[in-house]
Image (cartoon, rainbow, N blue to C red):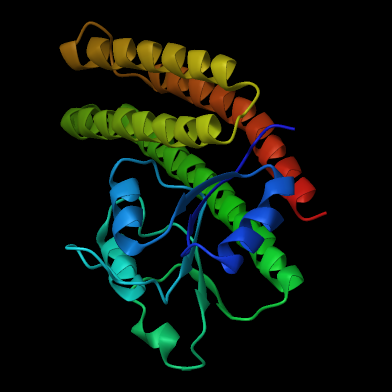
Length: 259
């Protein structure tokens, strides 16, 4: 079974760490581990963000660079790419003010030790499922934004006096399309999408064709006409059709995860 999810476990060595690794192993997750705040921060500096962080807030503080659990969360809250990674907090404290002290918004659960292993795994599954849902929602949001840009281009293409505005909107469309493709491909690669290679090739072809079209329009070698925008619309809907298979794949992964 392919590995679709990555988890960073930040937990001191001992029974708890052994138990968590024992619970996660059968799920075929890719688990990276750190035993203290300093080790975790060094690992974070050289790694891509995972799908989930599981952190013991009561980390031991030692060494010349002293990073405890709360401080590590503060650092994560300021680090691009990591601040929005969902987090599960483990703690021995019954202090109800813990959630208010945390400087991050993506806290999926705070689990008090000792805990029920079944509840722990339910939180793991639930957090990863919500992580997938957020990605699907963002892909759909980006599709809507691209469709809106195309609609604006279509309106501007019929107005000769709006040439400069058309050029600016066209560049915005190209920039956002590049961002959209990069956003999707990063997630596809991390989650072993089986059609990634084909999808990547289609993206490159679409970008090449769109870049050529934009260059021709900006240089004046291709007139601004509604049918010109129709070419962009055709390419856009071709990509959306490809993405439907991608979304179907993600939904199946989510369904399998929650069984």
